[in-house]
Length: 267
Image 1 (cartoon, rainbow, N blue to C red):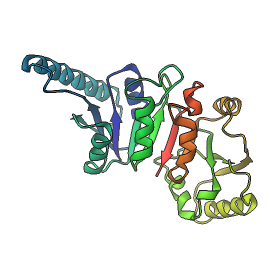
Image 2 (cartoon, rainbow, N blue to C red; image 1 turned 180 degrees about the horizontal axis):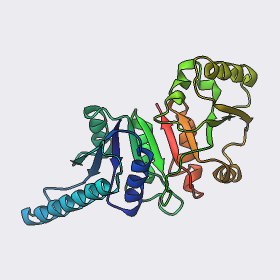
Image 3 (cartoon, one colour; image 1 turned 45 degrees about the horizontal axis):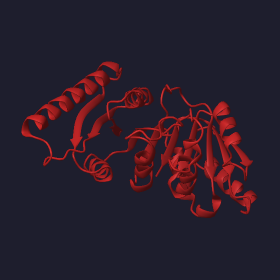
Image 4 (cartoon, helix red, strand yellow; image 1 turned 90 degrees about the vertical axis):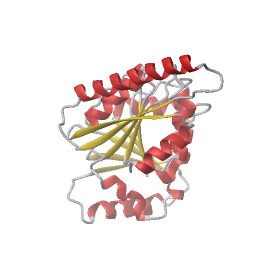
């Protein structure tokens, strides 16, 4: 797999990097570490710029050395990437040039959603970059997900292929999947039958599918309950309105309550 990890050298970013390597422990991967700098060449002297670039270079090499030392897979390859572009341009170029399969980024929290690499920036990447993304809350360590919850607004899912990505074990590593219908006006029974047929046809895994109607999914109390019962939230790309309600740093629920479980957005 081709992996991109965004870093600003903060504790949040370092934790995300370790989480990524644990997630990829058994997976041969080429891992690109991307740092983005906003430098105004017109306002700083050559000497100041030189010192700043030297400091950035030192931090990047320390970060990549830490990753190499932490990794236990000899088939992990590491690359450094520094960009002076804006966030979206830098990430999009890296995704395209390196054919990235999955991006790891630190997720916003109640206390840290104003962090320069979190909050609005993380949400902007989710909205504008067409790539699988795993948002990792601070201080969360990787455990193999045993229970995954998948909120779906069925009104925007009209094709079976929307669910195919859930069969990729590189991303969805659990065999216990709870599907939550967040749109109570849909023909739920018909959709449930369709999903069951999808998993039963040509499926080697024994996936435990559970279904739950919950028109109050976007409720702080219910989301706190989810964090005690599940190991990961998965959101399909066509349901980005769900990530908007959860992750938007201005009005998303996870900007108001602390989130302690990773969120995987699949394209």
